[in-house]
Length: 522
Picture 1 (cartoon, rainbow, N blue to C red):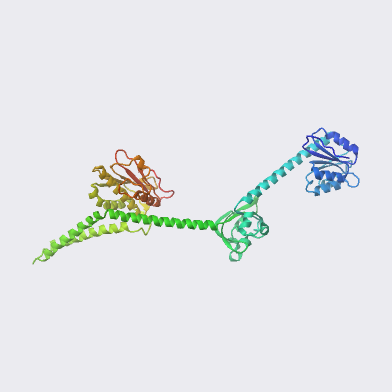
Picture 2: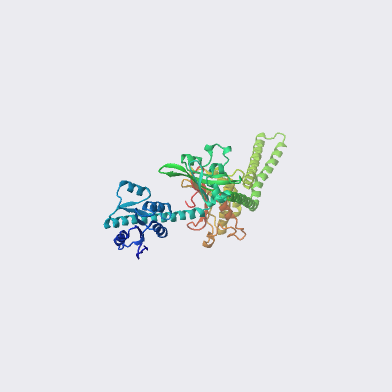
């Protein structure tokens, strides 16, 4: 008997019976239900049709010559291509043993002859829906597995699936590439023996061991791991436990070789060190340049006590040349010589301290003393700039953490610029230097002058290297100031004040303050 196929069908039903009349009844029962119907009158034909068309439902007669329905069912279930078909047995045998045997061979249902049309329709529909859903689910699972495989294969990090003993159950291509061997060679190997020298370490201290045995997630960096050839590499790994209903079944390990990354980090650190050295050198050069500009003023400042010492020494010599010298007056004269020598020594000490390269880095500083010391430096220029300096410091101002030499360099640069701007404007107003606490993390220091001010065009470029508003300027002063203040963890900026002049400010972090650096505006 040949197969009959209905058009526009989605579900395929295979009818198998050696009795033509039974086949005709089944066919007439199902032909208008939208199924694609296949017909076979013996076992071999049924197997061939099932193998080629993969029907969802097979209505299978048990009592057939040569090959009965039990054998057909057993062979259908043994073939992976037909194993998912729903086999519904048809038989006049209605005893319990016949049904048990049918179900044990993989049958899905049992219809006794003579069957009722409505029963056949309902049971075929039910099993067809179940098989279709199962096949759709299997197809979706295969798609997901395919997607998962593509994703795992595309990941550059090595991935292992381990059982609770650390045996590798899964490895992606990246893991094989890092290890330098095929994936097949990794499967079944012990992760700890493969990647670590277990003889040199206690098992309990091995990476990932706590994840496999106790379900504790781990994340470590710069761990020495071994390749298949015994060579080592610095690695980073993350391990998470494999749990099924809170039962531990091993771990998933994601790892990578960070050799290049560590080399890049070291190169970056070397570059940062070089930049810091160059910044310190530039700052030192800037201080030397400032001292050169102020040399005449310092020479005059030191010359005053030296001249006084010379004059007092001459007076002392004349007094000692008398027959009865006035010892009290002589003592006073010698005290004045000592005082003037201390004055000259303090000026030289201050200059030497300013010009030296920082050796100790950041330290806890009292802002009032730092600004007063800077003011004394700047006063050397006051006779040239014909201006005064007023310093106002907020009471109970907290100490800051910074490099004193570099902060003083910034403050001196801003004050000298302000004095020069005031002189250029032809006014006699003093330069105002103030310090106040700003929030709970930083101190703000401000230098305000009443000079010609800064144009809007220049304002945007003030801190750019080699930009200057001076005829003889090099344009490295404010750029250096920004670099120095940012190295302290602070910020520097300019704001346009009310009225004439300019206002520059910078912030320094309060000693012991936690969290981010000072806010740029406060």
